[in-house]
Length: 91
Image 1 (cartoon, helix red, strand yellow):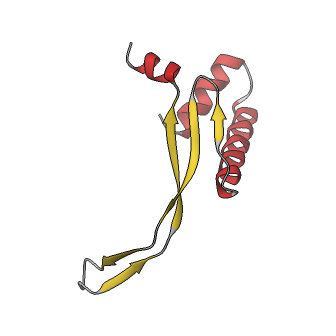
Image 2 (cartoon, helix red, strand yellow):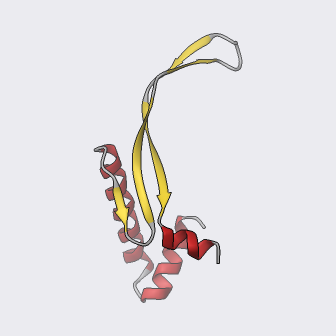
């Protein structure tokens, strides 16, 4: 499922226009992104938790030249599914 599929599904279920639904979905994604950027967890009951995790600086290699490079530290978005979601997927 991509963003367009999500918007179409929500619009069909709610009766909202696709334009209004698109605004809601984009606002939701922006809010989630900003919370993760602020290093905040996002707990959605019955669905799961999105949380930022710091990836430490590591040493890597340029695949074309083989030269060593430093991969800087960064925040990564992680997801931990809720028990209800796991049960839904596995039933």
